[in-house]
Image (cartoon, rainbow, N blue to C red; front, side, top):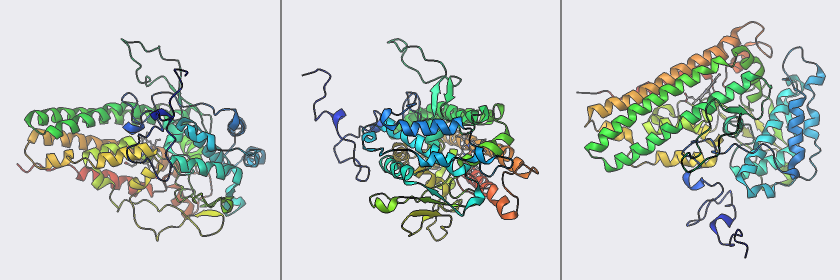
Length: 485
Ligand code: HEM
């Protein structure tokens, strides 16, 4: 037998778990090498340790070529004034040809599925947002795109829209190759200045900087994840030494969050607010955040009863970053920041029509906080990681609340205060990048009646952004524990 041939019952040879049923008890989830560890890498955190795939194999070349074409054509936003019909014309993108492309072989590899989600959702956003908004009340997405996309989404358990994982987590390459790892110098995380983005809507440096700001924050956040793990180990022991160490870890965590704030603010160095607002951001919009509120109609579903009609179609937002959610959950701030009163808008829901169309109304749906809803847009292993973190039987906040250790409480409050300061800085960024440009005369991509203006001040995730972001920031501040001594 070939030494490299795996036995049929070898764990690496196990079939991919059924997306709906999950992993059977006693079976290891091998969909990614780190799946048993929630796909959280000790060097790169929520980013993959290796650069993502840059191209699918030959069988799916027609998709890759369509994406190449969309980028090469420099498609323009359909609502942008002064753009020629030719520049808006993206109908060819949807027409294919995508002859009989099957997705089943993609299921062998999580990396290929990720790339396929990236390619198809990117093509779809290119199409949707380059069709002039006035042309119809709905936008029909043809079956050659919707069917494979929904099949891939079922495997990945992700919605059929560009998500943070498509534009940040799995959208990077190294600028220059790292040195080969050796026994004495193991492979390290990529240097923060050695990253470039793979796919861009606008081809601008500004857009790349926008994505890379988040990517750098993810990499800086690795230390935060390590500090969380170390704290949880200490609190398991729970003696005086453990409290002292935890105090140190929480101060260190506050410093990491301060660094995240610095990195966040550094987006101003490479991404111009007007370019972001007018040229970049409209490409991210989902069905619930576009000013014209066009229905997205996924054609071809009537012939595929096995596929679920999409219910989540919010635009991509860094609110889908698992890192910030992890900080909230670990510090017990999520009880405040993920409160059901901070809902944002409701997700669009499919209508009962035979073709699944996503309408913009959903106010009869039960309230769920916006941040909790955003977890549906995260890679499923990361979602599970957050669930696991939430189930920690000895949460740090409970220990601090017992009030036995004043220094521990100070350290905890320092970390929560840093998170509040992070959110203050984020609100400043939103004022600079969204609120400011939206007020400039002529700075709006589509007309300017009151309803449209209101829609323009929605986050790409569909929130009433000022109210929502201030709410989350204020609720974070409320998580500081008063020292009653
Ligand atoms: C130009 C830069 C940025 C702008 C204009 C911006 C804008 C927004 C907006 C409008 C929201 C409201 C939610 C929505 O509807 O989408 C939001 C939420 C959020 N953004 Fe950003 N964002 C920027 C950069 C970042 C970066 C780099 C991060 C870090 C990963 C980040 C993390 C978050 C988080 C965690 C939320 C959820 C609210 C919270 O937890 O406070 N943002 N952002």
